[in-house]
Amino acid sequence: MPPFPIARVLETALYAEDLAAANHFYGGVLGLERIAFVEGRHAFFRCGEGVVLIFDPRSTANIPTTVNGAPVPLHGASGAGHMALAVADAELPAWREHLETSGVAIESDVTWPRGGRSLYVRDPAGNSVELASPRLWGFDT
Image 1 (cartoon, rainbow, N blue to C red):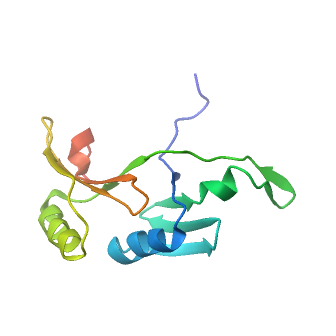
Image 2 (cartoon, rainbow, N blue to C red; image 1 turned 90 degrees about the horizontal axis):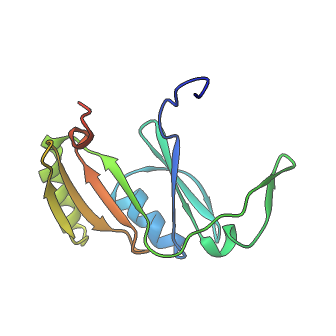
């Protein structure tokens, strides 16, 4: 048994080789606040109480780095990743219109049996990004 419950997801990571395109998508289209950008390595964005990390896998999988003398483990992924961002049910129609106006294709629009709805799109790297009502998992907000 763990000593304490885990409170929430603090950060999640996706991988993209074109960080400029990722910066435009996450910062411009989705409106997330960019908190760090290192060309050829990463772009980080604030998302509510968490952080979305976009790494260039060519760097993070192959080039060792340290922070304050401690090594950061190499990591990376190939193929499409997935994440879901919480959006209120009532806001999904406006998000759909915004995404379409921004030239982002809606890949799927799902209404879930337990309640809630999800819009699925692809970021420029091909990752699946879901804008979803928290009701999908039984959360009010």
